[in-house]
Length: 65
Image (cartoon, rainbow, N blue to C red; front, side, top):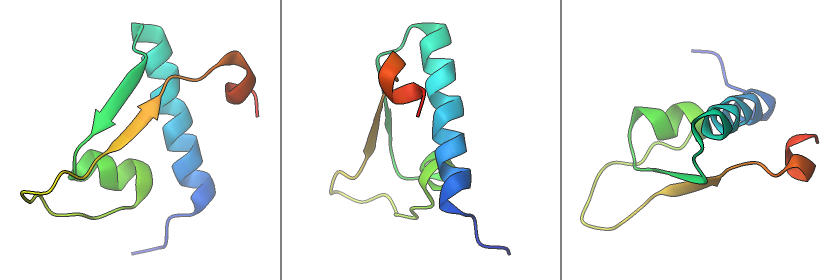
């Protein structure tokens, strides 16, 4: 399986942030699983310990970078 580049992950996060803006969401929390792996490349099994990633909605300044 080919390695996914950092640029690809950034594009995926940007698409998520576009959808968040469209639906009026300020943040999304991802638990371990397919969505987290797709968006970040992190593979983490579910356990009794909390592991997550928070994605904030873009600001006009940060989204135009």
